[in-house]
Length: 159
Image (cartoon, rainbow, N blue to C red; front, side, top):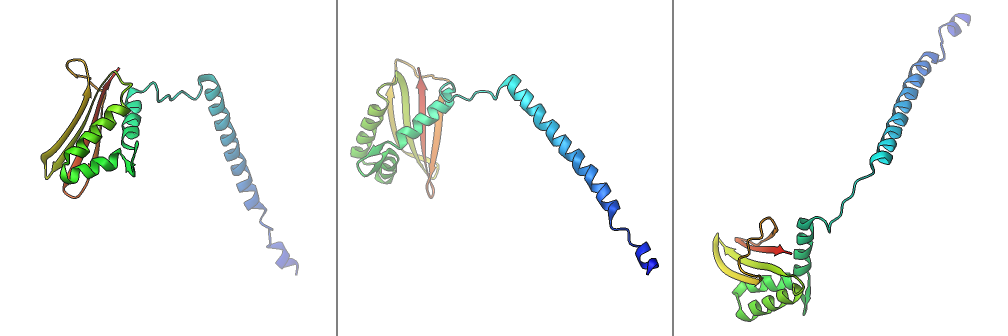
């Protein structure tokens, strides 16, 4: 009986090897969290302000235009209906709505180009500008893809 008990070690060696390793990993995590907290307190998180970024504001403006409510839908739905048959009545309605939505802007050009199999088949242009409209980088473009058709929406804006 004594010989059987003498060979059993109760697994103390495995406890001794993983406990220090776990403690070291825990200490590394605490040091990392403390360093990150010090850096954040010292430098701050930084600031993201969409109003300061003209590109973000222009993209937001384009989405506001497209999602503006009209009758039983929105402006995007009207543009899609116009792309089916290029109805002059719908074109004038789209122009009126865009002018109304952008009435507070000083200078802008809003264009809708309809391409079918890489050929321009329709174009709507709404603008309020003084002379040339070379607005540089303030162009926001959005493409709506249908089967073999593309509707290209562009907003050129300048303060």
